[in-house]
Every structure is written in C-alpha cells, then in structure tokens.
Length: 292
Image (cartoon, rainbow, N blue to C red; front, side, top):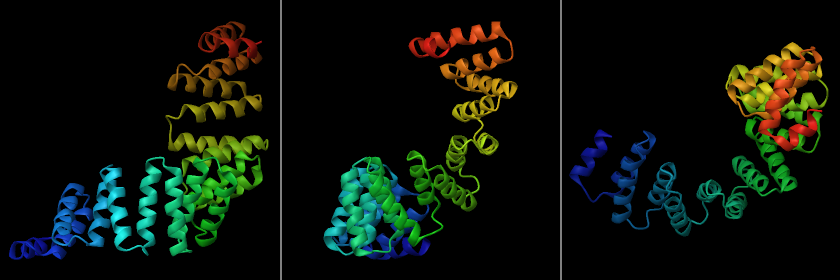
C-alpha cells in the first residue's frame, strides 16, 4: 500500500496504481476506499474492465446492489466472455430476489464455463426459490458431480429429498454434509426430521441434541426433540423439552398442547388443564379441536 501511495503521489494520472490500491483496500474490507480508487481509475481509463468489476464487487459488499449490477453490466459490455462477471451479476440479482434475472446470468456463465460448479449450485438455489424443484435438483446434481465435497449442494439436495419424502436419500446426503462440515446445524435439523419420519427416534433425538448444543436458543429444535420423546412415551423428557420451548417462545401454542398431553399421560390432570387452556388462548380454533 505504501508503494502504491507513493506511485500515485508521483503520478496522479496512473490508472493502474489507483486500481491496485483499490484492490488492496478491497482485500482489507475498506469498501468505501476501494470504490473511491476504482472510480478514479475509471475516470482516467473509461474502459478499464477490471476497475468496473472491482467496483461492482465493492458496491455489492456495501449493499449498493443496483450500483453493483450497473458496474458488472459495463464490465460485460467491455468483456462479454468473462464467466465470473456473469456469475457475480447473477449473484447480485439473486440478492434482490430477481430469480429470473439471476438464472439468466448463471446460464450465461455456464455457457462460458461449463465446469463452473458454484454457478450450477447458485442456479439450482434460484430455481428452488421459484419452486422448480426438479430443475433445481438437476443443477445440484451437476454441482456435486463437479465438486463432490460441496457441502451446500449436498445439503439442499438432501433437503429436497426430504421434501419429497425420500427419507433414506435425505439422510444419506445430509450425513455427507455433516462429515464435510461437522457443525452444519441445518443438516442436523433436517437429518433429525428425516430420522423421525423413518421412526429412528433415538437417531432423531441425537441429531436434535447436537443442534441444541450448537444453537441452544432455537425453540423449534427443543419442540422437535420433545415431540420425538413424546413418541417414545418419555413423558418427563418431553415435558422438559416443551418447557424449554415455552421459556424461549412463550406464545408457542403447540408446546403447551403437547406438554398438556404429556402431563395427562403422567396423571397430572390439573397441569394438563392449565396447559390446554393456554394453548386454546393462543390458538383458539386449532387448540380446541386437538386438545380433546
């Protein structure tokens, strides 16, 4: 950085020095400084493709998404054969929930670079966001073929398998994710759900317990573990988990309802009555019908 500062002092019209100082500032997370230097480089050299690309990246980091797209578009006009620029513009459109625009850019990137695993993953997630699960699965499969250790693609493929009720394949994919990223909370959550659906209750409890270790403030996981203990007729364990749910989320009606049912099984009629009353207060129509 010191050398670049000196170079700019000696020659304030050197676009390359501004560009490289902007890149150095970008590496340090100084987005405003990077944008300032890239802008100076562009003023000195209006067709400086890399400066537009770098400024687009910095603007994206500053959440100036429209500005980033504008810079990436200019970089594409100057150098239409760069897959990375299409990928980054697509990623920026993805951040704007412009699924069609993102998919179009990701497709262009794939045409230019057919082995770009990250783009297949990103296009798959954009298609998932549109509800096109079959097309999303095709892209995720390709991403995994190109990069078998892509935990994110494996996770979403496992998630999709679970959505379709293919629990064994969901578990297989999510287990691979966990081997690659042992603290991947969502993989444990959805493997727990898949195991619970396959009646592997002990396996499900183990997964939910791991999630609670990683994220002890997640009420839904205490609820899922409590429901699994309830299915095992572990009334005390279920009551404890449902109580923790209520501590974290006092308006969780189903936690009161199932805690009431567990208390009923234990013969605590008064405690059950109180919980059912609270469930009805929170969700009158649903709780009245299901607490019977």
